[in-house]
Figure 1 (cartoon, rainbow, N blue to C red):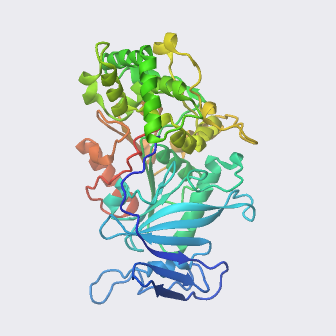
Figure 2: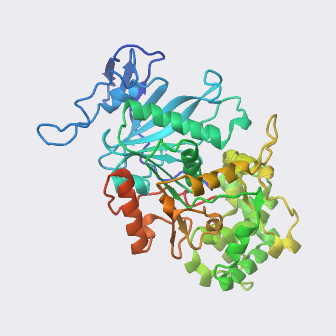
Amino acid sequence: MTTSEGSSGGAATTTTGETPTSGGGAGTTTGSESSGGESTVGTTTSGTTSEGMTTTGDPMSGDTSTGEPVDVDIEAALSRVDGLTWEEMDSQFPGYRYFMLYLQQPADHDDPDGLQFIHRMQLFHRHAAAPMVIDTEGYGVYPESQAMSEPAAMLRANQLVVEHRWFGTSRPEPADWSLLSIEQAAADHHRIRTILGDAIYGGPWVSTGISKGGMTASYYRRFYPDDVVATIAYVAPITFVELEKHYWQFLGAIKPACNASLTNFRRELLLRRQAMLGRVVGEAMMQGYDYEIVGEERALEVTALKFGWTFWQRGLGDMCPDVPTANATDDQLWSFLQAVRPVYWMADEFTAELEPYYWQVASQLGTARTDETALADLLIYPGFDTPLSYIEPGIGKAPWYTPEPMLAVQAWVTDEADAMLFVYGERDPWTAGAYAVNPEHDVHRLVVAGGSHSASIDMLAPADRELAYERIEAWTGVTPIAAPGTPRPWAAMLP
């Protein structure tokens, strides 16, 4: 997945909260307004957890004047959670308040009193009595980038977006990379769900995620099946070997004529290596990109190797007639490259940010093996594109792959899971790794015809969409509304 800053709109901090370091009686909150009236600082002098939580009324009872449930005082409720700090920012979504949350977590849940880290999350608060959708983000979260998942939108739910451990700022120093595992990440989510569920959100919880976030949601459900009433995982593959070949066989069957054009284009990029490298270097100088990790020439080769994959993953089939041929100018080749998979995605700024992803696929998750066949005679660095190439050397940073975790997850999904929905895109290469499901256990796999890595329930054929709505209502007790959500700009990508 390649990250993006996304849209702004959450830059103005309006409120911050500081939590107590110890528990005690009912917390008291004081506020002081700045001279400009722009921010309020809330300080809790003593704190408690869910017991003693002050609200403006019972959130499950009706307000005598409106008949609507009365919401909690969310600032006071957050301030009473031990180990949690928060800041409120301007929300892009009407009816929601937007908070950045920072929760102290153990790096090792088997040693809860050991090394700690601060876990970063986004909270979109609608009402304490509403459902909560926990979006188990597979990568980092960004305060300035706000998005509402499809499940949260269709259920009119609260939403909690959780940065994955060891991504972004959610990492201790020094970090023990052996603790970057699906078991520890699931324990993170369980602890978050327990703390906030007990303190504030007592309604039904639903887990969701897109791409690696969907993978993470399925792992969380496997280890803590009773934490949520349902899991909705989008375009989430599962792989059982370190470097799997069958993904590329699946990709090759998507519009063979277009794939042939893409192969010719990829070859043309490397046949004009010097002209393309000149543009890579020029862009790096203008934009400030660095290529210390992989180098410009390796970056160009990896981009050429993965170009066809990205083309279909992004759902760009309508561009098949526009694929440049050998008669195209260098500028035409470069422009098409920039529009689909620019080389700067391999720059240090992005590669380093994804180092935890490469660690995970090299140790537990597995990934697709890059197929070099069509470009083999043009490569200077064959075999470079493997996860280990993107992991910075260091003490304790030599991952050892084992397939057992993914085999166990798939076995659980097939034999024991219930109330799960997997959504895939027909032309997304990652769909080659779709979960095997058992509808008799109320676990369903639905595929968007012609869909890509941006597949959603809203895009399904009417009969499949109705099935999804019906099952979600049965699982949550809430009637869904047609609402496609606003996924993050980078949610449609994996490396």
